[in-house]
Amino acid sequence: EAGVAQSPRYKIIEKRQSVAFWCNPISGHATLYWYQQILGQGPKLLIQFQNNGVVDDSQLPKDRFSAERLKGVDSTLKIQPAKLEDSAVYLCASSPLDRDFYGYTFGSGTRLTVV
Amino acid sequence: AQSVTQLDSQVPVFEEAPVELRCNYSSSVSVYLFWYVQYPNQGLQLLLKYLSGSTLVESINGFEAEFNKSQTSFHLRKPSVHISDTAEYFCAVSEGLTGANNLFFGTGTRLTVIP
Image 1: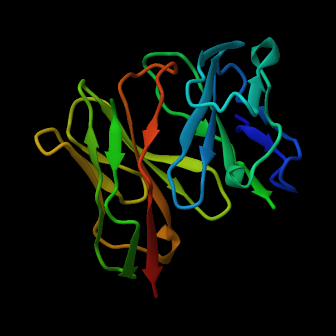
Image 2: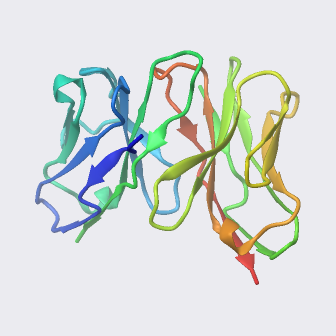
């Protein structure tokens, strides 16, 4: 099966600019996650979708970050305006909801550099 | 609340030597434990997982991890490392087994295998 697709792979922007990331999960996976991985740290959950509804966005800085998952498939994560501390790798992951199977599949990530 | 501690941020080891990457967790309920590996410029890949049953779990490339409930640990070991094992390793914990449950990650351990 095809993996989780993310684009772009790299992005460099100036602070206060806006940026958007795209994620296409594995077909049929109901749950989609966005993680932020700052250099030297483990991934931190930003938002979790189940189908097209938000399950958990408690760690999402809502004053500047937004995410949507239209039709329960693709998802976009937006930052507006970006700050220097947003420099990180943004990882998308998807998972089915079946109880007998567990394991996220991660995309390769988008490396964002804010200058 | 869940948390994961990886005490060693970097572990250098000579090729063919044994290695142990330490992971400790805290949680108020039963947990499920995972090790993910991240090769340079790639996404996270599931290495192995403990869900239930035997406390010793193995991966296809020679790694193993043992769940120790009394010590709240899930250390990763390999008796003889290869150059290709050079990567970042993340320990993660979840309190559930459906796609609706989040993964909480440690800060990672960078394993460097020296020729």
